Structures are given as structure tokens and as C-alpha cells.
Length: 436
Ligand SMILES: NC(=O)c1ccc[n+]([C@@H]2O[C@H](COP(=O)([O-])OP(=O)(O)OC[C@H]3O[C@@H](n4cnc5c(N)ncnc54)[C@H](OP(=O)(O)O)[C@@H]3O)[C@@H](O)[C@H]2O)c1
Image (cartoon, rainbow, N blue to C red; front, side, top):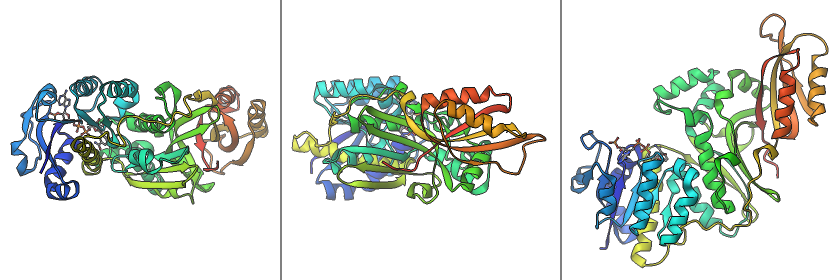
């Protein structure tokens, strides 16, 4: 049986998962693919660190230098699972220049430098596979490139960060405040010691950049996105949203408009009865809307050693099959349909909003607030003023607003915060009803 040599760079959470399942399900893979995926070399930072590797993995050459793996003549596919930006970029470029197929799960790197990587892939005629970079075990990249080949993509809406979703789920179900839910997520192993990119929305934004770029034909830059994280959501917001019939989710939204592609990640109120509202805990889900297929929903585990290994190994199978057949894999490289090349500036993004203000509990306040919003062309669709008071003479005012551009909302919020009857800063979340 033909054997394809695999070089694994990184034996952390995902790398060990890949190793475990390549060895563990080797016979099944041989049966299905008619070839052998053989891990022959692996690179780590610290070779002395104890690792959980399968017994059969003793044949794997483990080195502290990723260049040894790229240069190993037995290695035909290089798997980049070291994470980070600089070394990972150098590694991928070195592998491509050596004519070796690349598989990566590095969303941050693709979001930042995907354009350069795919330009090099094109120049060398060597493919880069990246299923694991977006929504872990969910095969969304393959679906976009292969299963939906006849579709123009109208929109994507996704819950693509499991840590944030776990925290919001606990805030909803147990009434926890953000800090307590985050501490619990860290204790349970669902959040990193440094959870910054998860809670500030940027991990989800990296995935949105990859999906949008794949679907719409040019690499969006981070500055093209409007991004806010769940660190601005409080238990009060979740409670008020529930009273109004909504759930709060960190939603990545990508839309094709005549004027260009819009992409954003925001804590968003979605209807309690919508299917995405029932995606809880660490699970991810992505709803794709195509002009031919209509709505399609993908659900599964977006992170973790085994789910992510499942995606990496699917890429390895495609890469190896293409190498054996001598053909270019159908899903290789970055082949967008290129109908939309422009990104809409974040200020132009339109959405409905939820606005919470702490205000003086005196007559006439609602009129002043409505006046400031109206002066910026923003209508109020409903208002809630709970009986409970913050303290003494202060009240909460919750407003559901009509559609407005982000730039309009920013101006209105600045004016509202300057009103003498408004205390502190306004709380602004998005509202999505999943219309056209
Ligand atoms: N974890 C997930 O659930 C998940 C899901 C989807 C995508 N990803 C992506 O997959 C990648 C890997 O994530 P991970 O969670 O497995 O990371 P991790 O647990 O931190 O593992 C990183 C591995 O890379 C090695 N490494 C780091 N820098 C290196 C260098 N310069 N040269 C050689 N080896 C180096 C480390 O070696 P030592 O072991 O010696 O320190 C470690 O084995 C990241 O890009 C991540 O965004 C992760």
C-alpha cells in the first residue's frame, strides 16, 4: 500500500489529537483511502516535555526544530499546529517552497496573512488545506468549497467561539455575571488562562475573515470588520433580553450586499425561538444561506483535541489522495468566485440595536432620549423600564431600536452619554432577526 509521509509540527492539544487518531484509526483510514497516512516526524518546542502519544508513535522522529520536519525527505505533507504568527508563517512558506502540501488550523495566521500564504501557494502550485481553522470539527470549509459549489452565498451567521458561548450560556442559565462565568469556564478547561481573544470577539472575527474571504473572493482585513466581545455583556442585559423574548449570543455575521461584503462579530440578541438560540455550552453552529440551497445549518464541537483532529485528518486524506493520484485536489488553494471584492466599511454596517441606559428617575427623560435618537434618524421600536431601581433616583431604560448604520449609532450614543439625565456609559448590543 502506498504510504504518504506526514510531518506534524506541534504536539499540543490538536497535534496530540491528530497523532492519537491517525494511529488509533490507521486501519480504518487505510481501508477508506486505500493508502497509509504515516506520521514520520514531529516538531515541538521542548523535546523533554512528557506527552500523551500512542504506543505505535515510537517510530516518529521528534525534534525541537520545525525545519528538520520540513527538510525531512520522507515528509510530503507538513501539518502546522504550532499556532502563533511568526514561526508559523515561516514554517508554512518554507514547506510550500519545498513543494510540500500544507495543512494548518491556524485561524489567527490565515486572518492576518492569508493573502500572502495563498499567493505563495498559487506561485508554487502547492495546496494549503485549512478545515481546522474554522469551527473545529464542523466541515464548513469543505461545504463552502464543494457541497455548495452552485450557490452564491447570501449570508453566514455563526456561533463560532465555544468559550464565549459557554460563558453566555452560564450567564443565561445560572444568572452568573461575566467574571464568575469566565472563572468557571477556566476551572472547567473551556477557557485559556489568557482568554482575551475569545472574550473580546477576535477569535470569532478571525474565523469570520476566513469564511468571508473564501466565500466572497478577497481577503478582508481586520480593519474591515466591526468587532465587539462578550466582555461588555452583563447578567442584567441577558435578563432584560429574555423578558423581551430574545437570547444573547456572540454572533459572527457575514453578508453580501450590492455595495460589498459586510462582516462583524457582536454580542447579539436573537429570537428565543430561532434554532441558533438553542446552541448552548461549548458548541458551535453556522447557518449558511445560499441562493440555491436556501438555509443550511451546521452544528458541532468547534474546538478540542479530537474534534479539531477530525478536521485536520480530513484535510490529510484529501492532500494524500491528490498526491497519489497526481491531480490537483478539487478543494485545493483558494478559489473564490470573486463576484464581490469589496468590504463595506464598518461604519456602513446596518443593524437593529438594543440600548440600555442608566437614567435619572424623573419625568421627561424618555422624551430627551427619544429626541437624541430621533435627531440621528433612529427610531424606537419598543421600550422597557423595569420597576427595580439601581439605587435611589436612578432607573434602567431598555430600548429596542430600528435599523441604523453603525456610524449613526455611534453618534447617537455619544450624544446620549452627554445628556445630563444619562448616567455612565450606554450599553449597546446588536439585534438580529435573520431576515433577508
Ligand atoms: N485547541 C483547539 O481546540 C484548536 C481548535 C482549532 C484550531 N486550533 C489551532 O491549532 C493550532 C494549535 O493549537 P493547540 O491548541 O494545539 O496549541 P498548543 O496546545 O499550545 O500546542 C502548540 C504545540 O506547538 C509546539 N510549538 C510551539 N512553537 C513551536 C516552534 N516554534 N517550533 C516547534 N514547535 C512549536 C508546542 O511545543 P511544546 O509542546 O514543546 O510546548 C506544542 O506542542 C493553533 O493555531 C490553534 O489556533 C486549535
